[in-house]
Image 1 (cartoon, rainbow, N blue to C red):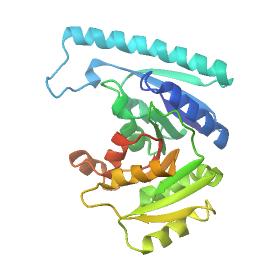
Image 2 (tube, rainbow, N blue to C red):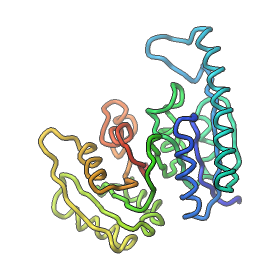
Image 3 (tube, one colour):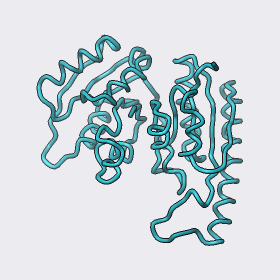
Image 4 (tube, rainbow, N blue to C red):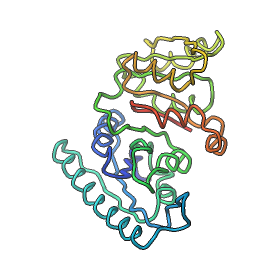
Length: 269
């Protein structure tokens, strides 16, 4: 069996350079190769709320946009290779990310991609496809992120299986970080004891803090505010603990963090 690799999903040229930069650091830390994938979206893969199908003009424009972006991505990847000396296979598919992610279910160790809200129409389901189709840990990178990665990590603590899986998946990053802080928001006193029991064996010098939100504040906003004050360069979290369908119908903390985060998210389902 081939060695596992880190899959970098380049949904579009937006955020591609940032994803490659962080993926390079992850590759060095884990000692794993990188593999790049881009999917040229077809018109049948897009469902618009305002109409049943794309017009002929829109179909033609979409195809042109996708071809042009593929060439941009090839240029970005080539420049990255020249700058870093790292080479990686570049897989190109046509269709949609939901179907393509099945190819990597058993071969990729984790997935790196840009924040979905920043991507063109047709490419905004890549993160859900990675989390739900591959069941692998995901690092989501906001395209505007120019900071470091993995030196000051924050853990959004809640004793749930997805967070436990995230801790296990990203333990090498937590162990290597200069500083780690676990934050429990609006939880009972015993939450920090649970956090210590789970995190101390991985990051011995981690600190722990309980935060009470102000009336009307959402957990995601409080957590992102704490991460900004801590100057975190990564937030470890569990995703979709209530289940995908419920989060789709009534967006929860995971969805808000994904939509609003200005720093990289290290997450697991």
